[in-house]
Length: 255
Image (cartoon, rainbow, N blue to C red; front, side, top):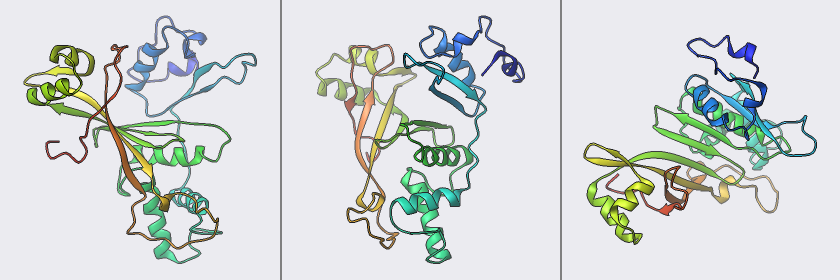
């Protein structure tokens, strides 16, 4: 992430005040710089600056990042961790290998037919699990109209949801807030309705966690590897005093 490399990006006006410090998370102009790059780049890498010895300082270190790791290798790595295999992906036959590859996608909240960006994101998440660090992957998908978050805690999906006037009034009453205050804190206006940001928080089931006894086990394809744990409606970024509230949307008949 240096000025010379940024000049090669087509249809991108280089930040007028760009300097090496603009890459750092604590720089006041960092978020504007990040937003400009998100519009045109497919993968950005933010991590701790190894040159800083006395303090933790994070920076945007690389852009145009690509993780080149075969799906089969990622599935094998996960299956070994979960004790479904001992040595290699095909040790119990091609059919089980195919099931384990599909289950890799389910482990990260996706169908095995998803597009390249989501596949790249979950492959990156599985690869970073091998490193001695805590990592978080964010993957946006215009196809699914969602953003995925993979961390050491769990899997989350963020959605843009549409709320009618009646739904807004009911939610405001439930939270003990005036409707206008609620809309100002949580919603974005649109013609005839409002838009909110919802998060579905998933947890892994016993079938997608390592067995307590550490012994090898057989794969059971019919059992889910993820379950919905909770759902939240997030406040707007400028609503500093507001907090996420519970709001069921994924399985709601009105969604």
